[in-house]
Amino acid sequence: MIPSALKHVQEIARRSDHPAIFLDYDGTLTPIVSHPENALLSDSMRQALQALILQAPVAILSGRDLDDVRQRVNIGAIVYAGSHGFDIAGPRGLRKEMATEFLPKLDMVEKELGTQLVGIAGAHVERKRFSIAAHYRNVSESDVPKVERAMSAMAARHRELRKMDGKKVYELLPDIDWDKGKAVLWLLENLGLDCANGRPIYIGDDRTDEDAFRALGQRGVGILVSEQPRPTAASYSLKDPAEVGRFMRELVATLT
Image (cartoon, rainbow, N blue to C red; front, side, top):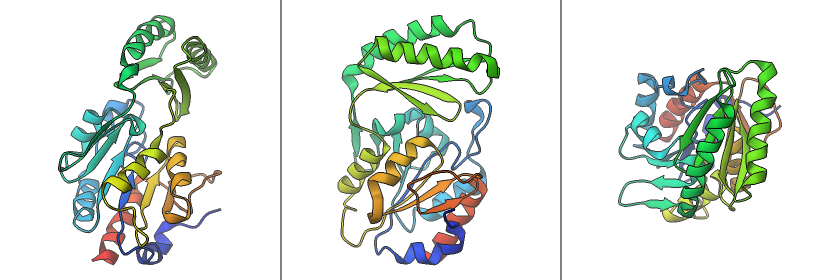
């Protein structure tokens, strides 16, 4: 079992002269909820982020659309990466879009998938700019395999896309060599943080965040948000968004 980041805040802070903080959104900054539109940032978490950006660069990498996560957080100095890092925007004109040539294919598959899942109670198809998500959090356990089969069949039929598993969701994304890990490395380079004495901190709860933990390796600090122990490439853990907020506040105090 990996140690709690709360017990090692000073150690984590000391490991870098130039810290940068990368965070997931759902399950990290906000609790997981039955309906994604209800995942709202609390006032205390917003205040923690506002204090943090005074001490270090901050980026939020989410599976949500870029505009969605940017509007929910609504702090101008933060870098936002939507669609699992496929769509990045930040201050001073920072911008990167991956796989725009796949948009017509995603449009077509969205219509096909909506037709296939229309008869499954609780299934919800969400079109993001660079992916299509099939949420099954509100689907009966007996019907979940139907959702998985439909998504697998769609990925097999459309080889340009790959299927990815998340928390109570399956997604279809462009099948290219890009993920949150690649996005973090690109951000480090383009924000001028790819230096010997830099030590990025990445905090996330989902399987997609494991790509970032692995990409950073020993050059960074990975912190998994999970109430239950599980295999991870992260070095530390936090139980839930409440502990993430506490860690951020203690990190700010230490950096100050």
